[in-house]
Length: 252
Image 1 (cartoon, rainbow, N blue to C red):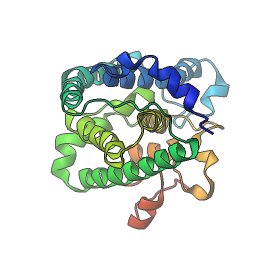
Image 2 (image 1 turned 30 degrees about the vertical axis):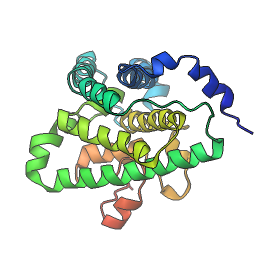
Image 3 (image 1 turned 90 degrees about the horizontal axis):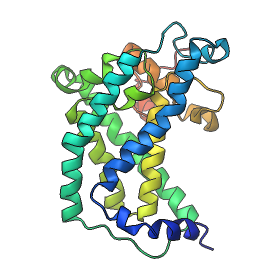
Image 4 (image 1 turned 135 degrees about the vertical axis):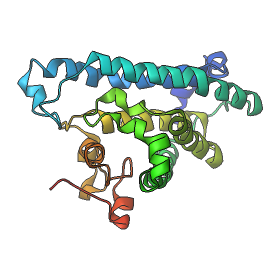
């Protein structure tokens, strides 16, 4: 039974939008900002509500609209000046194919998980190199470490090289695996959600890492420690690569 068929059929009704060369950029920005909004609301409430502050990873830090604007403006700049032209070139060279049938739900979930594992490994390797090789850190990755107290919008506060290289990993894996367009969209949303959650600055009761047993998934505290110490926790999501490399730090 194709449980996802009604969803996919509904999306096919907007095929002209899906075929548009501007769709990937608008989709990326729209999803990213939508995922950031709940955490920005928590940031606004935290200054007045002790219940919210108790979940902050740095309770004494305060949210700044100026830092939010700095992060947002860089994200918009990177998307409009660099990502959009590359998206148009990709759209021209690789026309969008929209099959009539939706993928089976279990296959979609399995393939999204595989993409997350691949991206996690690629990002870990990229991240480790950009910390261990001082020239790479100074030239490219240092921008992302401007903020030691992170908030949701710092997830995409990075230089052009970092934005494009990690974006290539996220886009290439579904293409190489030949994933259904719906699976691709779900992967992008999940990947973006996990990245925003990593940088949100909160250890919430319903956080994703609490759903994964045995400490196999790091979460916001895991990545927060990376921004504080800068010499540990290089994998964005899962913890197995850091365990194997001896770079895992739990803060215990």
